[in-house]
Image 1: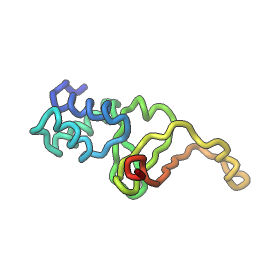
Image 2 (image 1 turned 90 degrees about the vertical axis):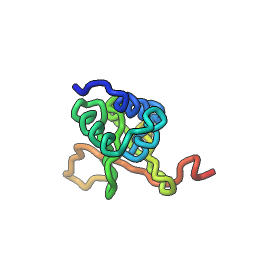
Image 3 (image 1 turned 120 degrees about the vertical axis):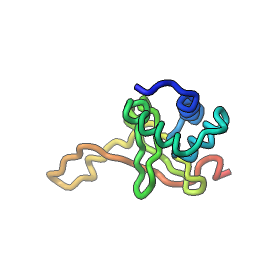
Image 4 (image 1 turned 135 degrees about the horizontal axis):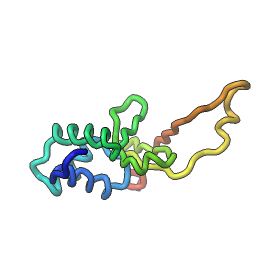
Length: 125
């Protein structure tokens, strides 16, 4: 388990405040409010350890660098929305029913990922 440094606490606070998946630069920008000397290398090292400690979970979107979300959010089945204007990613609650009806005969679905793209509330205003 990683020790609780001021940098790690600031990074954890960034996730709690945002309430959504964050990329490394978003984490750095938010955590610098608490630790102005924080740098991107420290963010990446801390993210790696927090994933190993199962505090964070990587969010993989097709063709993009991973973002991260709290493991407690990842443990609940959900999907994501990515704003095409500001690149922010948001959690979507719930899931579409009936996806297995789309499968060809004889196919069995073992899982799925859905990413919806569009404009977030702030960008759509």
